[in-house]
Length: 451
Image (cartoon, rainbow, N blue to C red; front, side, top):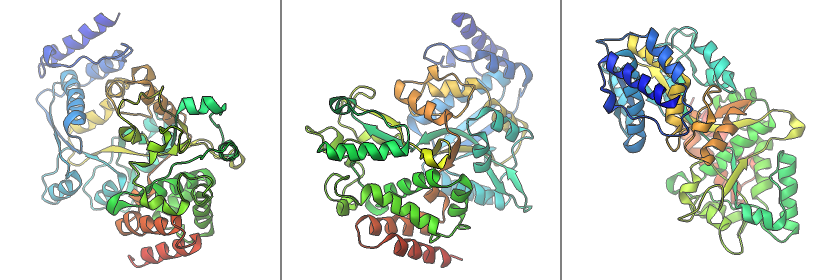
């Protein structure tokens, strides 16, 4: 069956005339790609003679992988699409929009800039029905609609952003052999997680490695902790109000969550080294304690990218693994996930731009990219067998099991707060220099100063 499907895709490429069949990269993997969705899209979409320009942040391997996907869009539709990547995309897209020379589609690394551009009239709402499709086909679908909805120049809210490729931050990394040696089981609730930490201490082990150092960005790992705990302590509406400052930073609920973060990291029994010294440990070095003999720590909470800093030769699934940073069973808030991701927005509308958004709805588009390392999707119709490896597949399952997804809060706050006083305030708290109430009050003062 698979060879016939591949031939069908090649015939589409030839019939469209824009891309020769031999130029198309046939996806690799288990062969479960949803070619029916691709062929159905091709059958109803004719863009012969039309052009499409896409501008985004992906370079090198990521850019090449996306360009290969674009080739399939062109083969299906007859369009001629060009993708350009830039490491200064966020600055350049504003310049281009202001000059009236924006591409048809821009790929934004985070929602904040897209929201600002929507308010200035530089974005066009996505095609009618896109929001309903997202609600029906993405896990935690309303979350993705909320994240892509901004106030337009007309003062009304519209859906402008379609998320494609996300990452997960709500992960705890560990060494399976260490857990096996002590008979530890992966916790399924936050209550079990805290009980496990106490058991580790009782066994003479240290539960956590924590490192907040990151040069001029020191402190950001602590903000991720706080954001994750906020989603596990209060409904997502509170999180949303917090990142816009409708819920003040010195609100008692925020202070409570910062103190909860401290219950993990402000305890010398729980943290490798001294709790006061976490800001002096580079976040890239912090997971190394998992792999020493004997281990310096048993667990490390960090995002999906952290294996890049594991010892060379570490095999995920064998030498290291991860589990979902669990939610409080007592708070009954489901399974929230913190992460980040890229979103597609129309910056210069034409028929091809609208069609490309529709193309991104096909399971095929997601499955094609799932076979590339580093791509995750909340698309419920995309078969997880197509992920490049078991680690991606496991993270993808965490994503599709999410009841709520929220973007990194510090990225959504004004730069002077999210990438400023929030970072430094968490360093002050983590080092014991200031208590949670003082830190929260000072961060709120910095936010007030921006108004």
